[in-house]
Image (cartoon, rainbow, N blue to C red; front, side):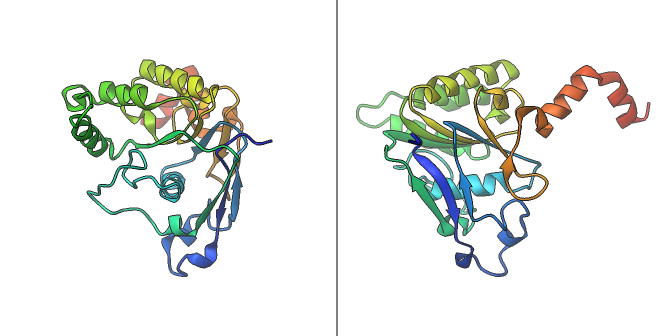
Length: 239
């Protein structure tokens, strides 16, 4: 039995306008279903390959606010999500998530603002996210939010974090995944992508397909740079 909250993502292209830019995204335009197999799934690929577009559509289809937060959040500073969410149907497992969160690097400031506002209500504990650095507040929100038996969608969570803090995030994700949580994450981080037993789906070189950790661009570029820094810089900078 598949214990995941979301087992499969199905896309009905009949619901997408014939002139929509979504049909020009190579990774997804011929894909009608994506099967999720592990508690942690990564979307990887070059900028503009469609990772965040699909992740956002999944989040909206799950009932999350497009800019992030829980399913109870209802605010909008800029309506940017695509029509893809209307064409997605989620095949769910027998379990239901007890909690969930959609966390986006690009709209974190707005979510942190709302978190501060909500925490000042009756029974709340103010967190003062804006009094900390971006990375500190991001990690604190993660540590306050991640729980077992939850569904979490993260869009480039490494953007605010140092390598050391990415390792902390890796441990938080693994801890929750081993206690019943499910994660779908768009990421470029070779650190986060190294989480054991994660499913990695690449958006490069054709339709979405599985990819080994060592075959991701994130790993290969970083490995090449770390092991052959002088030669690589000489070739890139021509000096």
